[in-house]
Image (cartoon, rainbow, N blue to C red; front, top):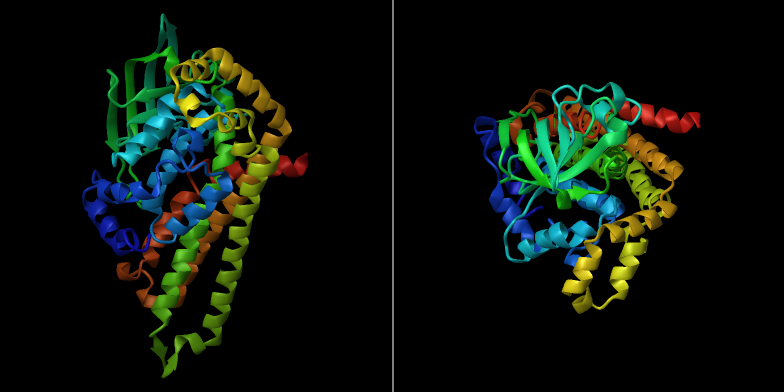
Length: 430
């Protein structure tokens, strides 16, 4: 982060403001030797085996430098996450190992997750609201697979990803019962990229419109079973909101660090600003709130990993994989076994014994609390930092103005803060 991201954060922000289609491939490639694209991939398939808590710490640190760059890697992990939470072992070899192997060759292979539609945002993420959402993305069952039609919007990494996880429905009148999750390669016939958004903040990570016109998706590219689409979406977002809260905490921390750098040489009326009591009180208040937000993130991530959704390495399929010699895991018979529907259903049913509906609901509630509290706090801290800086607060060269623009997005993605407050209310009402 300090070597590749911090020196270029402001430069990237300015460049993408004028050329919103620019993408920092050089930074992505510089991250490959450090395994940034294989963080959540299980170790038997060449990855780091990161849990939610690991990702939260990682993403906070990178976001203190530039959340746009951090979101490239976060959105990629989000695109892979449904395969893990399913747990669909059929895709471990096909897609996760492909990402890890490409990374080792020095070739970035990015994933994206596509949920949001033109007329359905946060409501498409919730089982209570999806029935009234204005859905346009549908899948039609055909021999050998599905035909996909529709549009997705504001998709992070959408225009640079090699594969996109797409949520669709077989019947718009019964979205909860007919949801289907499909992995679509970027080169598929009928798949195209529409508008790439001109964003206010987090510009380094693009947000794109994706268009599907009679795209054939083989049945083997389905994640989970038919009718499990909404369940997978809920599980993924429940697990991912703690790292998103960490995005906001990282932005707030970065804004405070930039404020401290600003204050280090500033005087007013012959005194250093550090000596002013009102400045000391403001710094103490910001520091305390940031520490509280960081703890909320960690609490939510730890609950997800070790209570609500058992840690990846403790799950049945991981125990089997870790007990087997690596040559056996890579062998053709073993791969065929894990690629079977029977293997998926076996591990899914075993996983469900550990992930109860109540546990998943509490994961969603805890992570939602962390998400809306940290993101609101990030906006507040950035505004307070600019207030302390006075007329120089909005100046771009200090980076606090950028932090404010970056922070605003955290109140919106992964479900608006209003939706996340409803999850928190559900927990308090139980």
